Length: 239
Image 1 (cartoon, rainbow, N blue to C red):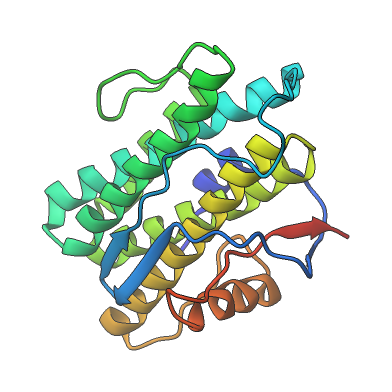
Image 2: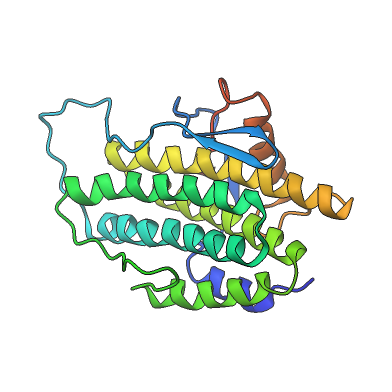
């Protein structure tokens, strides 16, 4: 199955280079998998930091752009899953869409704390960011071909999120951003495991990562294999 068009769009937002697994994980859990298709989300939208709350941080333009981009990228995931749920009525899409709404809310706490303008348009499938708008259109076109394609689209989105979020984490030293984005990585790891397991159940074939390297994929799946009480999302350091 070919994803040349989709991957061409994704390359715009993915920084080239290899990634190695960082030995330290932030001890935060955002989502849990109760079984392969049932995602439940813990409360994660409250913004807290381990730093002195009296310290004021000034965001760079790059950090501002990162926050606004991630707000819409989480919306893209939510909107795609809502649309695919309408198409197929398969519960995994509705469950993870609910979790993605929590991810959107978590990024919104950063927007509100730093008095940024929220880019989100309150309409499913409509985006301020033109690259994300084009990607949404392509993903829906691909996902509408079959349920298997739809499941692959879900896994592709989660792989892209893991890569993008880790790039953004590596580009900042702001503890607010690092904490919220690390939570998002953890959520995406759980979602990827759920989609890959669903794919294997439907097809009887092992899932092959579409953007992550096999090593990154295995590390991601291993990070959630310990269970919801102990799992930590993979934070990739630049190698």
